[in-house]
Amino acid sequence: MMSRWAVLLFVVASVTARADPRSDFTTLSETERREVVKATAREELERIMKETPQSKLLAMGQRIISSVNTYSYRMQKQERVKGELLPQQIIDVYVREAPFAVRLHYVKGPGAGRKLVFNPSVRAEEFRVKEAGFLSVAGAIWLNVDSSFAKSDSNHTVREAGIGPLVGRLVRDTERSKPLGGFTMVPEGWNEKGEYCASYLSPPASPPFDYARTRICTDLLSGVPMQVDGYGTKGELLEMWHFSDFKPDTFPNEFFDPDKARF
Image (cartoon, rainbow, N blue to C red; front, side):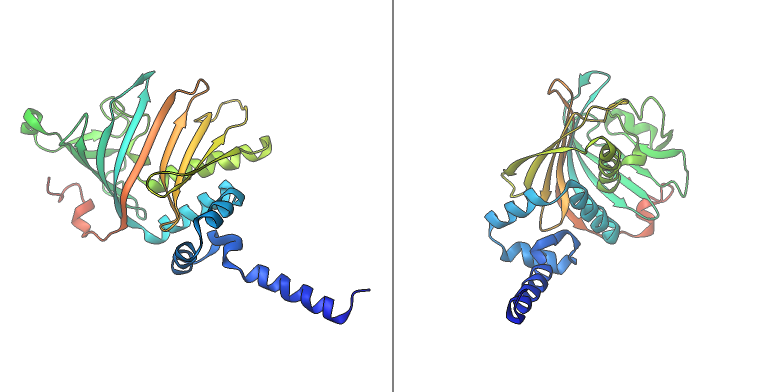
């Protein structure tokens, strides 16, 4: 039988372990998580990340995005559309998660100078877009979300724009993988921006997952995935999403109003 002191030490140790915020930093508040990340050695953070399930990391990112609601960032993206790997694009993205609305300003690559606004509460099936260069003489025009033009340089429609919908797709696949044994995590370590990266290998499934291997790099301070790379079964790049300058932001209502937006 355990002595009284042994029992007391066991209880104290158990409570201390549960109270240690590093035991599951994904459940901490914004302030608490930042304090823990800043105060914890990189080696210890790496150990924590290796032991944290993908589902918890994604749930944390989803929760943070929802709480921020309106935010902006710069996106570098590249997609393989109909078998062809298209050139990279740089786009400034402005998002309101609820009620959903998005504004895109194309900075570099195909479509540079293009600006568009999608607000389904105004028009559920159309977005307003203005092209640059000689096409700008047409002014801002309305296009269907599922039109051939809208799908010419992406596998996704504007309904899926924003980090929130991307994380939502990853969460969906994570849940779908559980009955199949889940994704296999391959830790990679820190990238040049100080984000922790890991690859997740998809289990065989029919229909197959979007990616055979998904590489995710998470910024621990913001708690949000800042890089998502998707690869096919032969190791070919299918989609690349790199984010920078992510920040909560505020916008006037007119900013997401296609009729009042100033291009």
